[in-house]
Length: 193
Image 1 (tube, rainbow, N blue to C red):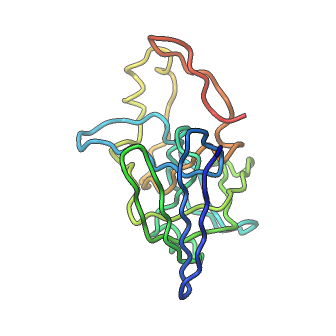
Image 2 (image 1 turned 180 degrees about the vertical axis):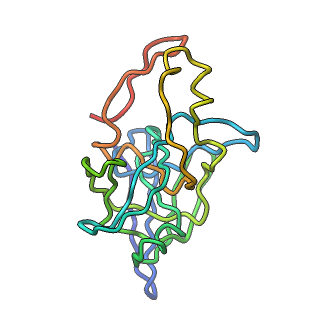
């Protein structure tokens, strides 16, 4: 059998979605984000965005961790409450490389992210909440962090007191446009097609 196996059960106002990974993974499977160690570290893939309910005029500024290795997007549960959104309570079961994880989460629809200038709008697919994001303020890059790379010295990042409230996976195609990243080993294609 190719692709994931999906099982959805409705039990007393709670849905359970089981996604089992086989050798051929499709865009419908779910991956957990990478866990970081406790040491302070800058993660360049954090960007400052605004998030709002679709077509609302009120937006909240937060950092989004762009994770091309995840094909599902997550929102911090407290951000859901700040937006005044009500999600459907579900149990989400995910098989990862290490083990199977089941989390109680909210399934949220109808959100969009914007650039800080609010000109570019990207509608989000269904996203899920996490009580705590695996990326925190210590992973947010600063202008000082960029001085480590000479080709980034001239970039000035805004100083904003905001948390990392989103993990944007590669299922948000407009936010994760394909690009190439050069490592010491080889050029790496990133993003989805």
